[in-house]
Length: 146
Image (tube, rainbow, N blue to C red; front, side, top):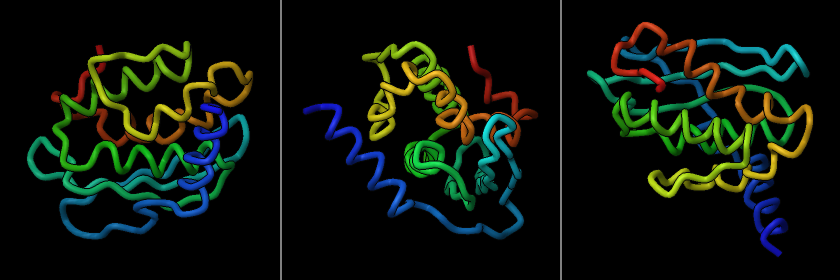
């Protein structure tokens, strides 16, 4: 029952991607990222305002897991500080790699991806957008993943 609900959430984000757009402006950073294991591609856009992500968006093509994960992540990180986002990043990786759920942080719809850790080649699909985020924020001292 719960697995079916999670599948529905994933497919909803895949079919009706949130924040699927290009952002432009002087405060917008972007990074192009390709998953080397499967060929999924995406460009992540972040509009930064001081130490916060004011708006997040993406464009890309890929499997349902990578595109749903990107849609979920862009919703999750908007209007959050880089420090909060770093904590979410760590919690999401624990979810995807080990199936571990933390009670301290709300991962929103991303929780529907918990079962991905059981699928051999799929964790990289779910983590692709977060790895792009690491790349675009690598020089920000507030974005430190512990």
